[in-house]
Image (cartoon, rainbow, N blue to C red; front, side):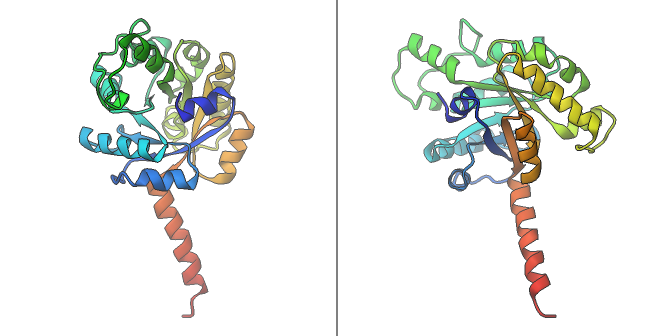
Length: 257
């Protein structure tokens, strides 16, 4: 079982980050050494080719850190290929109702749970010669599937989506949800906070992990205390740009004129 699924299965908190710009496989070692449990390779808003994705996933497996690929849409190729390349799982945007979650699982899981195409000696199996019956069951059990709640409809349907067998997490995209609620970026607004808590409550009924994108350590800690367990803290862009900006600002303030 992947590190990510093990952490969540034990009721603990998994902390990762988004990667949308850095295309060097060695980034995996930097994130792993920093203590991240996983990272999300963003192919919804990012622009990774299949070849780059393959290299990033291979680097991550060597660094012993899980990769979750955010796919751009619910479509067979978009779901199949990251898994064949060895991704630990998927993050699927704009899942508003249980039927969409079931469609994701149909593409992501092998029979009898789904209809994922079969190509055994690929990166996902480390090119080993495996028993089809044993490997398909193992892969189905280990593949991590998270769906995103980014609309009021998804929030209302959170409990029903969480009840779909095979869904491991429901991840709130706070910016898109804020826009959908007419709040446009007000991620701390009481209505948005209430929506996230409603998703978390829906998840609690089936043991599915509630997830959220966070922007600061204090915010992250506060949400963990409210039950959020699948955390994406910032991104490669914010960690680099904001970290550098804070350091340079402090240095310049302390420097003589």
